[in-house]
Image: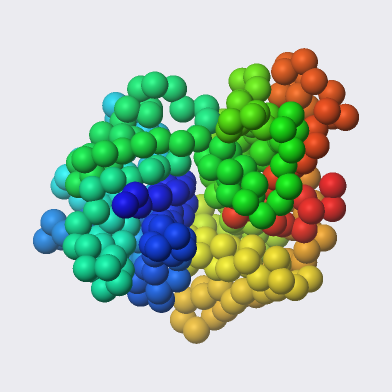
Length: 327
């Protein structure tokens, strides 16, 4: 029995096949299916993962870390409190958490208390060294057998169960995640799929985190008093609060045209910041243009034209933004 794990830059999830039925793993505390890929180290040395880390990060951001997947393979450790961790060590903790929650489900349903096999998705652009680090992280989390599958390939296999994909069809996978963008071409073969050309990726960075775009826009539009507070090195707590609010704004704008947040300024004073979908889409235009340019380059470098592309699959939690859906 394999545990399937999608370890994302911002959120991770897992599922298992039981009696031929795929079951997503419920995750605490809300029993949803998305686990924040984040870590918080308590003063007592306990490692908190996921929502527990998010709940504690405002207490001491110096003990908190997220988005470490993008740094996998670097030798520079993160300093959390008085301890240091390499990116792959934090990846291990996220995998370990997913494994623990999955074992609660398998124990309840099938009496299986320990899972030893895992299938983990990795970006198609990962080289051998990064793949090895991911496999080693899973082994340190307690798995004895680890298989890796490219993220776009896993997605196409899944969609192929529900949508017709004919032999010879070429598919573009457009994956705009919480901190990454990847574009991959795959062709359906008699047995399985073949990756065409060299998958392309936009450099990892905060430009891809839409809440950062909103935060920077807020700093341009807010009052001078608030801007001065945000530029102060001692206002880390206020920045964390506002950043969380910007993330909420992003989610609200996927459902309605306009949204607003109230920002505490101290001594009971508050400032309101509003954003509508048109303004938000204006912030996204450079990013979307850049991702489309990357897709153009991929198609061209693979010796293809757009007329050869039969389907485009939109993946990633940011691919559902309305500005992208209109293209």
